[in-house]
Structures are given as C-alpha cells and as structure tokens.
Image 1: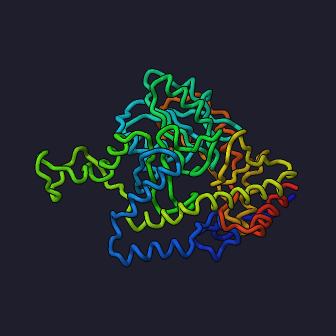
Image 2: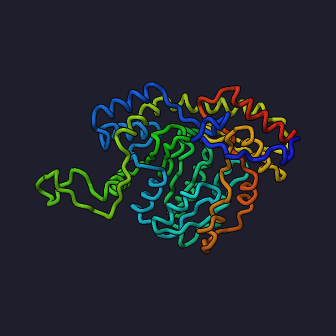
Image 3: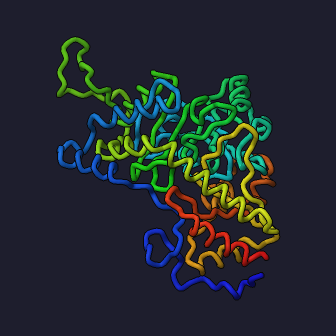
Amino acid sequence: MSTATDCPLPPKLPSDSSPAAIQVPFSRPSIEDDDIRAVEEVLRSGWIAYGPHVERLEQALASYVGVPYGVTLNSCTSALEAVLQVSGIRGEVVVPSFTWVAVANAVVNAGAVPVFADIDEATFNLTADSLRTLIGPGTEAVIVPHYGGQPADIAGIKQLCDQHGLLLIEDCAETLGGTRDGIVAGSSGIGCFSFYPTKAITTAMGGAVLSRDAALVAKIRSYATHGLRTSTPVNGSVHRPWERAAEMPGRNLRMPNLLAALGLTQLARLDTLNELRRSAARLYDELLADVPGIVVPSVAPGVRHVYQMYSLRVLDGQRERMLRCLWASGINANIHFDPPIHRQPWYAERDFRSIELPVTERLSGEILTLPIFPSMTRDDIHTVAAVVRKVLI
C-alpha cells in the first residue's frame, strides 16, 4: 500500500488543457471527420449565427428523448434559469446540495430560494423520500439532477410533485440517453441538457430545454432572444419583419448555427458513444471489484446507466491520498462534488432552509471520479485501475 509521501503532488496539477503533462485525461470529446465537415460547411456558408441547423437539432433532440418540443440554448445553466424565470418560480426550489453549484445558482439568479435536500447513498440521486419532508407552503419546484449518467427514480418524484402541484425540472446534464424502467431521462419533467465537452455529446458550449409544454418552450425561446417573439407584427395587423418588440426583459442565450451543426453529427452517434462509456465502466468494475476500501458505482434495478462519470467512494479517509497518487501518475481524476453547495462560501453565509444532510456530508469526503470517455482504451483503463490498486492493496 502506498503512503501519502509516496505520492507527492506534481509541480503542476494535471490538466486536460495541457495534454503533454498527462497520461490519461479526465475526459476527451469524440470529434470525428463528419463533425469537422459539418462545422466547416457552416463556416463556408457564412451562416454561423442563428440558422437552420438550430431548428434541426432542436427537433432531433426532442425526438430522441420522446417529447414534442425543444429549444437550444448556450448552456444547461441557462436552461435551468430560463425555465424558472418564464415559469414565474420565485418561492422555494428543492435541490440537492450534492451537485454542481450551477443548479443552486440558477435558482438564486431566477429570484427563487434554494432548499437543500439529502441524497440516496447508493445512487447519489434525490429520492421521493429525501424530498418529502422539505415540501412546505413555500415550495414551488423541484430540480432533480441525474447524477453521473444514472437516472433518479423520476416516477416516484413526479408522483410526489404532482400531488403537491410542484414544477418538476430534470437536470439531465450528465444523463442524455439514460433510462430507468424504460423512462428516458428528461421526458417526465422539463428536461434541461448540457453539451459541454465532458458530456455525452458536445457542441463545445451549449444546452437545451425539452418539454411536452409548447407554451413553455415558446416563452423560453422568446426569453433567450432578448424577450422578442420572432416574426410577430408589432401592430397586430401588418407584418413588418424589421420591427421587433420585446414581450419580456429577456437575455441573449441562443445557440449559434455553427455549434448546432456539430450537435447534429454528435447526436447521430450518441448511442454508440454511450455504449463505449458503458463498456469502459464494465471493465473498471471488473478490475476494481476486489479492491478493499472502495465502493464502485451502484446501478439501481431497471436503470440504463450511461456513465458520463465513473465515481467511486474511497473509504477510511484515503480519498486525498488516492487523488494525489493518480495525479502524480499523470491521471487526471477529479472530485464531484466537494464541498457540497451548502458549505460553499456564498451559500454557507446565508440561512437557506434544509434538513440535516448526513449522506451528502459523508459522500463529499469520499467521492472520486476516474477518467471515462468514449475513446478511452483498455490500456488506459488498466493504467488507472493499477494506480487505484497500488494505493489500497
């Protein structure tokens, strides 16, 4: 077993932005010739801002998830905030503390109040039970991030939200293509998605809202376009396309045509990319099954986990040493998430309502995410697993 002094931190921490310094990156987007051709065609067309690929991507995403309507945006964070803004949510919104801070930031920036809930120890997701005690007279919405590629029990959560008249928002940033009991992530509530380079598909930067609610999607499209409704006569009778009138104080959150073209070619390969991640996870499971002091990801019954992340629990206070040894070996592992949101400075200084969060507190000190991405080779996975084994065996 390695000791802390066996694994000093390197002079410069590994970074995916400095590939020469690392042996195995944390993530690597899958960019192929058809992606490059699609982007080049748009560049040569001169139509690089809003254009036809945007609508095509919106339709393709909605069809994939199984809902009728969609709108693309510049990020999943914008998607979350836009849903809250146009829905008029200004009261309490229940969210996990064990998630990326953008979730709570979106709530605050929309003028609402986050309430922090605990999570399930096995899947790191919210459950109906973890939400139930937090629902009160001021509760207006629930945001459910599906952690790491594994959908939460959204059927149970939706039933609870319906009982209390709460808006249900699914944060599917990490779970495009994941299913639970045949239910596609993002198809039960209002689905918000991310296309950041570490995600299942990428548009470099980008996001989307997918929904069964046509009016909601239309409002978000307007909000994301400076509050304008496109092709709308100002005087209600004569169509004058050069005249635009804001119907709300919106923002500019649109996805450009250039990035949508990349998204379309990426989406065409999504199932293949997800299956490559699942294959990598199976090999990790096999290589790490007998390692003491860790808990490999647990998959709930009926779940198709798409492994946007492969997150271990490292027990007995060994997480930092494990991370140091991985970094020292040129392996860009990471942590998702520590500190949890309720302990981050801006939130810790304010009295946001919550219950005790024992699972969140425990997991934030144990969680460690190993590299996983579609082009990861078997040798890469063996290299990472060998360091994990060396530290603990």
